[in-house]
Length: 204
View: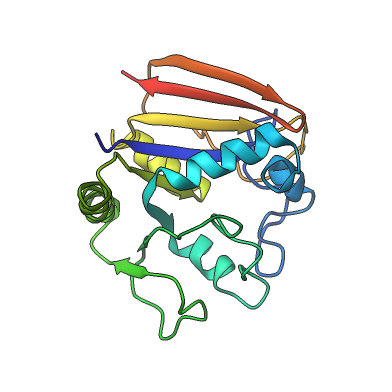
């Protein structure tokens, strides 16, 4: 069964970037500490990255995040979603207008201009088709940014919330939760590793 999973790293004070994020500083000042776990050599942290990538049938992101990862200082063969893993999922970008060009032409990009629900639906269709081809369940992963995940939560599009809680207080930055619709969650797992605590919640 394909699930819609919001998956994001977050600080102890609820931020998904440090202060002053922008071009050339996508994670904000100090925000790289949120993702130390994802680049660690720790076997358990490598397992989490490997298994998350293996279950990703399609990935949804917002235009601001796309511009960062596709920019000159963005992803390459060693840094990016599942860069060290075998295979790359298709990516669905929510945007008001598609970019004129894409630097990362080796990845499968789809640009949806009709809103987040349609983008999630397109990603689900891709993930379900890949699931049928492989004979195993794959998920849709909402990787961010924070505003996209917040909007998806408010719209009732998220089925599972996966938080990687980094042991850092950023003081300010981009908050994940800014109000909106209340949610009841059930914790399904909690796994402490050297660089984060990995929390998995199901939304009721």
